[in-house]
Amino acid sequence: MTTSFPVRTLGASGPTVSALGLGCMGMSALYGDADRAESVATIHAALDAGITLLDSGDFYGMGHNELLINEALRTASPGARERALTSVKFGGLRDPDGGWSGYDGRPAAVKNFAAYSLTRLGVDHIDIYRMARLDPAVPVEETVGAISELVQAGHVRHVGLSEVGADTIRRAAAVAPISDLQIEYSLISRGIEERILPTLRELGIGVTAYGVLSRGLISGHFSRERELAANDFRAHSPRFQGDNLGHNLDLVERLRQVARDKGVSVAQIAIAWVLSRGDEIVPLVGARRRDRLDEALGAAEVTLDGDDLAAIERAVPVGAAAGERYAAAQLATLDSEN
Image 1 (cartoon, rainbow, N blue to C red):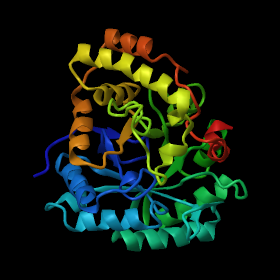
Image 2 (image 1 turned 90 degrees about the horizontal axis):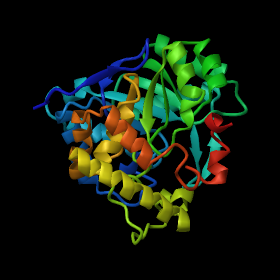
Image 3 (image 1 turned 45 degrees about the vertical axis):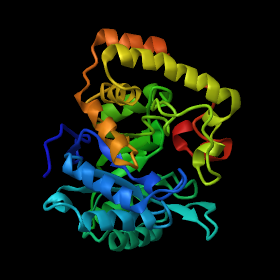
Image 4 (image 1 turned 135 degrees about the vertical axis):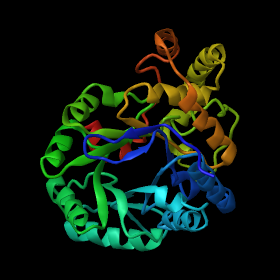
């Protein structure tokens, strides 16, 4: 049975969704091997708890993630399929060995990607559709225009953006209503606060924040001794390397004390902090297991007052993290960083 869960609206033109969304990427790619049955059970548990927003990408496991969501929706409890909203990123080009070949934002490619996603997901429309990274060879107006045409045709409900900067946001918003920007935002990734977040608020655009636990780094469950598999993205992430890892985990221990004083877990206080940054912000939790999901959902019940927020800022000041959020080659693809 589905329970009630707090909701938020994504911008002036976007849908009303659960105040936390479920990021499904780790169930198919980039964080090492995952258990398919547990992944499906976790999606079911999220839907039954009142989570409505499921976030995916057509290149997560080269279609695997969308097929996984399809399976979960087909076998979900009565009514869950109708309540679920899908947010899909497209444009990432892969090769048979799992390598990356850039991004394709051409209008014909946008519609091709959408056709495949609709089939893999088993749905008649995608609720929010967005390009994962800006294609430097294609004006954003053309890419957003193609998504807008999909909206007019009924295949997509809302236009979203992902990892783009303030200037690109303005150009995109001049073409079509934008529901939200998906971008990394956490206690140790606060780059959006200077220009991007004010621009979004000015234009009435929401935020779906990913990486709210910095890929597990500030979850309270990561340790210096943990060995990462070769197919785990974090094995190559600067924040998980050498002295950077030690420095960042020291920050986590400082945050742990604040969490203890509040009577919550590290993960819960980190997620609650993102929730506290504005009613237009919907954090995506990347839980792959039901126990981690239960912990994350508890963050919605945590209220942070002024003293709590000040204590969090003292424990993890702006810019305190060591290492960039992506390796240099990946960072170069982010319009939001340029």
